[in-house]
Amino acid sequence: MSYSINFRRKVICTMEEEGLSIRETVKQFRIGSASLSRWINQIEPKASTTRQ
Image (cartoon, helix red, strand yellow):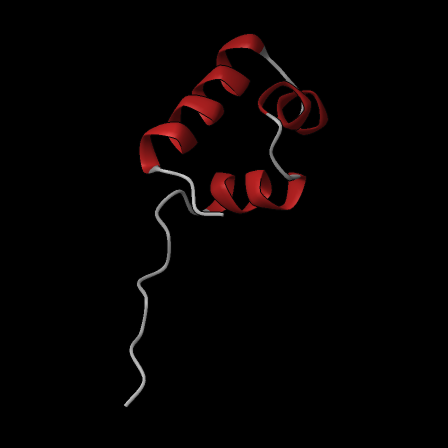
């Protein structure tokens, strides 16, 4: 599932403002810990490539 940039930013801002751990944040927003870890390192999704 692909999440919007706005949602990703909201999750990270909430995590920082409330001082939540990754575990607490994923439980609150019902997302995967791998997804959140990836968003922290790179919030913008990678550009998709087209096959030829």
